[in-house]
Image (cartoon, rainbow, N blue to C red; front, side):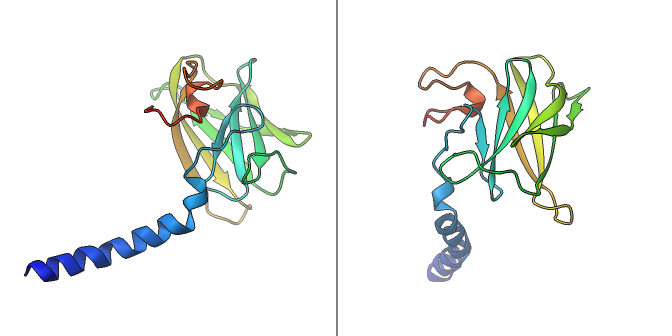
Length: 151
């Protein structure tokens, strides 16, 4: 019985370890070109950056976090107070997307980024807290921290 359970556990771990191997290069946090959070669940990656004016800027980036030409991705962002979330839409400004309005005020608010690789593709979602506190270990805000400390 013990050997059967051990074999079942080993089989259950195979897909997980394969997925970890395939996506290993995304485990390390990438610094974005503007100091924002790099979202690696899509290719090409995108950087989420809250500007000083409160607007959100989205930049397409490569595996090293370098800005690149914008493709066909469609982005929307929802965030702020859960009872009254704001839905941001974006306009292209050069090679970046900039939100039509500022992100709601607050120090640590929930964010949901919806990313479609192309108009006919299913959206992928990234969820995180927009924590604007300064990280004690790097020069970024906590939401974009590239350190290994607990968040």
